[in-house]
Image (tube, rainbow, N blue to C red; front, side, top):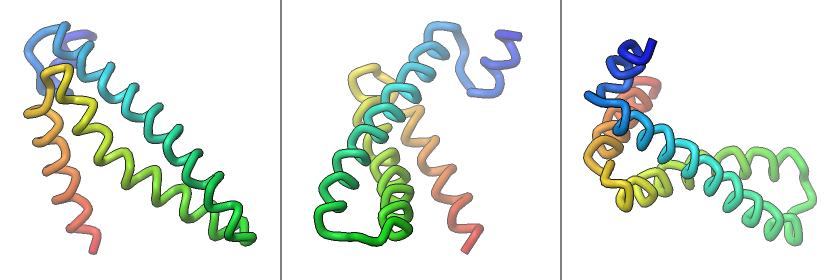
Length: 96
């Protein structure tokens, strides 16, 4: 099972896999927290709940892309996540 995860994530040892999981989890938590702060601030100016929901989802997506790269730097996984981001951008471009 571990060997399948190593192959899926494209890493060669369990330590790097653990670091990848750590970066994914930390950046997700930080993005949600930052989005909560942003939407709480926007609630003071916008009364439309649907608009707030849309802005929250968009802000989570945008913040996550930035935060995952910043979070990867201290863990030495910058090159892994830069290539991850490039693949993601290519897939998004195919949608449009």
